[in-house]
Length: 225
Image 1 (spheres, one colour):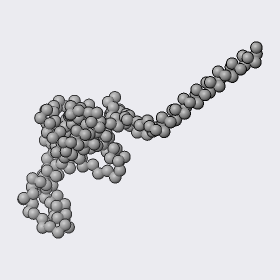
Image 2 (cartoon, one colour; image 1 turned 180 degrees about the vertical axis):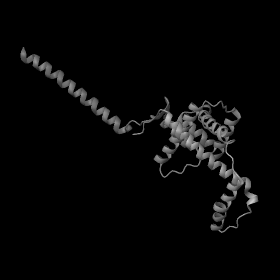
Image 3 (cartoon, one colour; image 1 turned 30 degrees about the horizontal axis):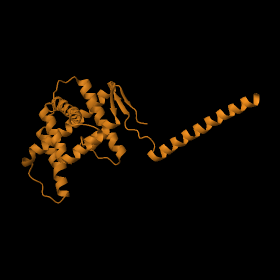
Image 4 (cartoon, helix red, strand yellow; image 1 turned 60 degrees about the vertical axis):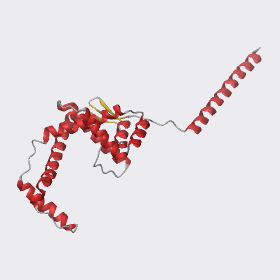
């Protein structure tokens, strides 16, 4: 009786081993055929409880939402886009500015992107991310709102003097053009252009300082490992 019981236990144990073996084999085969599961999305940063995901960064990159980014690698590009997204969310959250973005402005920005990368590519990339035009407009809305806040805060307060324009003309414009073999234009013909360049630079410096102070007050968590 004892040996009969032992034989039954051995048989059940053997069946379990065989069953687990086939299950493990099937799983290994599935992984071999399909490859390891791809991580589709994850949280990259949190700005005062508002998240920035990997998809947010990839969408900004894919649709070229930010100009004047000089990146040596994809990792560096993503880091620069992340910094811009953090700054956007931070300023929109903390300034309390009552600024609105009109539908016409969103359409114009979307049209700019369409002209740059092509209508077919826009649609293709929307499908790639499972987006529609309205979701893409949400990204554009945040970008334009950020720009408007900065413009309202700084554009009127930054003043450029004639002395600054003259100094820029002598120290920057003239040497640069002569080094390229061009004859510099008279300063009087460039007043508006030089004033705009100096003003833009002064605004950028003020924005950087403002954001630096805002970041010190904010709860920003970077989750890149």
